[in-house]
Length: 217
Image (tube, rainbow, N blue to C red; front, side):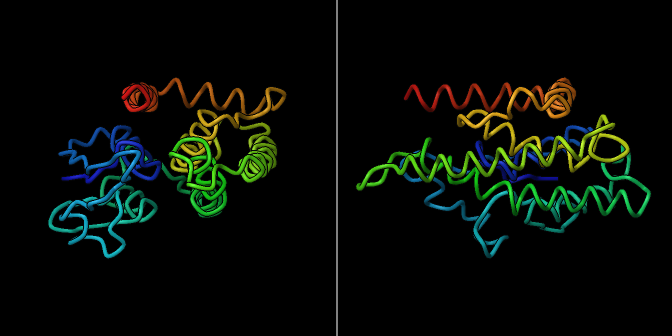
């Protein structure tokens, strides 16, 4: 098994955590990245395997897959233990929907913060108002998440892809200056539980170290 991975790719982080949770051995191929040029030039294998030229790309048993959601579903089907999706159809759909929401609803606001607060500003400067609006939108999503976690330790009946996908986006937002409000007790307790999982803790440690090296360069 091979994983084409981006050092700060949030979508690759999801896959790396899932692979670690399932204790699957794989070869990690890190693609080139820099703050100035981002992923250019694209890794030739990624260009050949993914028409979108993006990571993550997983290669397993001769099958090449891109899109983190598809990869997570493949891993669940091919390597079902330990499970990262509930068996109950309604709960399974609930978790799939939240994992998709992390990608499609949370990430656009996180990406705004990445562009405004991490990458070098464009020639016409950063837009503080745009960043503030994204942080406000994330604040509303944190509140929705707090409501969804009422009476629950995890988003589903157990820890799984919904928790992984949502935490990755929330952690990035936190690093970029948009943490969840402290009064959201369910989100706070859930965050502590997710962070305590060894694969997540290892991912945070590695990403933090990479960021520190990048910012110091």
